[in-house]
Image 1: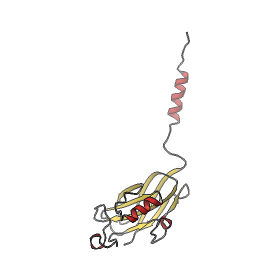
Image 2: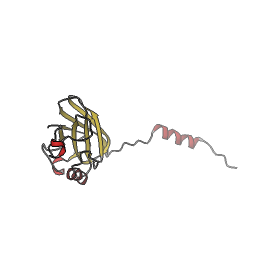
Image 3: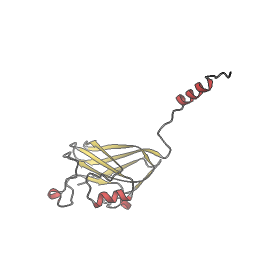
Image 4: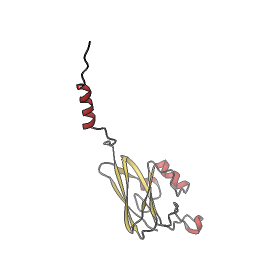
Length: 155
Protein backbone atom coordinates (compact mmCIF):
# COMPACT_ATOMS: atom_id res chain seq x y z
CA UNK A 1 0.00 0.00 0.00
CA UNK A 2 1.36 3.40 -1.05
CA UNK A 3 0.99 6.35 1.30
CA UNK A 4 0.11 9.69 -0.30
CA UNK A 5 1.40 12.76 1.44
CA UNK A 6 -0.19 16.16 1.22
CA UNK A 7 3.09 18.08 1.30
CA UNK A 8 3.43 18.40 -2.53
CA UNK A 9 -0.19 19.51 -2.78
CA UNK A 10 0.26 22.03 0.01
CA UNK A 11 3.42 23.35 -1.68
CA UNK A 12 1.52 23.86 -4.96
CA UNK A 13 -1.25 25.79 -3.19
CA UNK A 14 1.31 27.99 -1.46
CA UNK A 15 2.95 28.81 -4.79
CA UNK A 16 -0.41 29.75 -6.29
CA UNK A 17 -1.27 31.99 -3.35
CA UNK A 18 2.12 33.67 -3.14
CA UNK A 19 2.58 34.20 -6.89
CA UNK A 20 -0.87 34.70 -8.41
CA UNK A 21 -1.23 34.94 -12.14
CA UNK A 22 -2.06 38.44 -13.29
CA UNK A 23 -3.66 39.76 -16.43
CA UNK A 24 -0.90 42.33 -16.82
CA UNK A 25 1.62 41.64 -19.51
CA UNK A 26 4.83 43.34 -20.49
CA UNK A 27 3.40 44.31 -23.87
CA UNK A 28 0.38 46.18 -22.45
CA UNK A 29 -0.06 49.20 -20.21
CA UNK A 30 -2.62 51.83 -19.30
CA UNK A 31 -3.10 54.61 -21.82
CA UNK A 32 -4.06 58.01 -20.43
CA UNK A 33 -5.78 60.48 -22.73
CA UNK A 34 -5.90 64.06 -21.42
CA UNK A 35 -8.38 66.32 -23.17
CA UNK A 36 -7.61 70.03 -22.81
CA UNK A 37 -9.37 73.24 -23.78
CA UNK A 38 -12.85 72.43 -22.44
CA UNK A 39 -14.84 75.62 -22.01
CA UNK A 40 -17.66 74.21 -19.86
CA UNK A 41 -18.54 71.34 -17.55
CA UNK A 42 -21.79 70.54 -19.38
CA UNK A 43 -22.33 67.03 -20.73
CA UNK A 44 -19.63 64.42 -21.33
CA UNK A 45 -16.42 64.07 -23.24
CA UNK A 46 -16.60 61.08 -25.59
CA UNK A 47 -13.34 59.36 -26.46
CA UNK A 48 -12.83 56.78 -29.23
CA UNK A 49 -9.66 54.69 -29.49
CA UNK A 50 -8.96 53.31 -32.97
CA UNK A 51 -6.70 50.25 -33.27
CA UNK A 52 -6.00 50.36 -36.97
CA UNK A 53 -6.34 52.36 -40.15
CA UNK A 54 -9.41 50.42 -41.35
CA UNK A 55 -11.49 51.23 -38.27
CA UNK A 56 -10.39 54.88 -38.36
CA UNK A 57 -11.25 55.23 -42.05
CA UNK A 58 -14.58 53.45 -41.59
CA UNK A 59 -15.67 56.00 -38.98
CA UNK A 60 -14.47 58.85 -41.23
CA UNK A 61 -16.17 57.60 -44.43
CA UNK A 62 -19.47 56.74 -42.76
CA UNK A 63 -19.53 59.99 -40.79
CA UNK A 64 -19.97 57.64 -37.84
CA UNK A 65 -20.45 60.10 -34.97
CA UNK A 66 -21.05 57.29 -32.51
CA UNK A 67 -17.69 55.84 -33.67
CA UNK A 68 -18.95 52.27 -33.54
CA UNK A 69 -15.90 51.15 -35.51
CA UNK A 70 -13.56 52.16 -32.65
CA UNK A 71 -11.93 49.30 -30.79
CA UNK A 72 -12.63 50.99 -27.46
CA UNK A 73 -14.84 53.89 -26.37
CA UNK A 74 -15.32 55.80 -23.15
CA UNK A 75 -17.27 58.77 -21.87
CA UNK A 76 -16.15 60.92 -18.95
CA UNK A 77 -17.89 63.76 -17.17
CA UNK A 78 -16.85 67.11 -18.60
CA UNK A 79 -15.01 69.61 -16.47
CA UNK A 80 -13.97 73.12 -17.43
CA UNK A 81 -10.31 73.09 -18.41
CA UNK A 82 -9.27 69.46 -18.84
CA UNK A 83 -10.29 65.88 -18.11
CA UNK A 84 -8.46 62.57 -18.34
CA UNK A 85 -9.66 59.21 -19.58
CA UNK A 86 -7.82 55.95 -18.86
CA UNK A 87 -7.91 52.95 -21.15
CA UNK A 88 -6.65 50.05 -19.05
CA UNK A 89 -4.11 47.47 -20.22
CA UNK A 90 -4.00 48.43 -23.89
CA UNK A 91 -1.60 46.37 -25.98
CA UNK A 92 1.37 48.30 -27.23
CA UNK A 93 1.07 49.36 -30.85
CA UNK A 94 -0.21 52.12 -33.12
CA UNK A 95 -3.46 53.89 -32.30
CA UNK A 96 -5.44 57.03 -33.12
CA UNK A 97 -7.90 58.86 -30.86
CA UNK A 98 -10.87 61.07 -31.68
CA UNK A 99 -12.72 63.04 -28.98
CA UNK A 100 -15.63 65.44 -28.77
CA UNK A 101 -17.29 67.40 -26.00
CA UNK A 102 -20.91 66.23 -26.09
CA UNK A 103 -22.27 69.33 -24.38
CA UNK A 104 -25.92 68.37 -24.83
CA UNK A 105 -25.19 64.73 -23.88
CA UNK A 106 -27.06 63.24 -26.84
CA UNK A 107 -24.25 60.82 -27.88
CA UNK A 108 -23.75 62.63 -31.20
CA UNK A 109 -21.46 65.33 -32.51
CA UNK A 110 -23.78 68.25 -33.27
CA UNK A 111 -23.23 69.71 -36.74
CA UNK A 112 -24.38 72.85 -38.55
CA UNK A 113 -27.87 72.88 -40.08
CA UNK A 114 -28.99 69.74 -38.23
CA UNK A 115 -26.18 67.67 -39.70
CA UNK A 116 -26.60 68.75 -43.32
CA UNK A 117 -23.22 70.47 -43.27
CA UNK A 118 -20.27 68.45 -41.93
CA UNK A 119 -19.06 71.33 -39.75
CA UNK A 120 -19.06 70.47 -36.03
CA UNK A 121 -20.84 72.75 -33.55
CA UNK A 122 -19.37 71.02 -30.52
CA UNK A 123 -15.68 71.03 -29.57
CA UNK A 124 -13.70 68.11 -31.00
CA UNK A 125 -10.12 66.95 -31.46
CA UNK A 126 -7.89 64.13 -32.63
CA UNK A 127 -4.51 62.71 -31.71
CA UNK A 128 -1.46 63.51 -33.77
CA UNK A 129 -0.95 66.56 -35.95
CA UNK A 130 -3.31 69.51 -35.44
CA UNK A 131 -6.00 69.35 -38.11
CA UNK A 132 -5.06 65.79 -39.08
CA UNK A 133 -7.77 64.05 -41.05
CA UNK A 134 -6.27 60.66 -41.87
CA UNK A 135 -4.66 57.75 -40.03
CA UNK A 136 -1.11 58.80 -40.94
CA UNK A 137 -1.60 62.24 -39.36
CA UNK A 138 -3.47 61.01 -36.27
CA UNK A 139 -1.68 57.80 -35.30
CA UNK A 140 0.74 57.52 -32.40
CA UNK A 141 2.74 54.71 -30.86
CA UNK A 142 1.66 53.43 -27.44
CA UNK A 143 4.47 51.64 -25.59
CA UNK A 144 6.43 51.72 -22.33
CA UNK A 145 7.76 55.17 -23.20
CA UNK A 146 4.48 56.65 -24.49
CA UNK A 147 1.66 56.08 -21.99
CA UNK A 148 -0.09 59.45 -22.14
CA UNK A 149 -1.22 61.75 -24.91
CA UNK A 150 -2.83 65.18 -24.79
CA UNK A 151 -5.52 66.37 -27.17
CA UNK A 152 -6.64 69.97 -27.47
CA UNK A 153 -10.30 70.36 -28.47
CA UNK A 154 -11.46 73.23 -30.64
CA UNK A 155 -14.68 74.23 -32.30
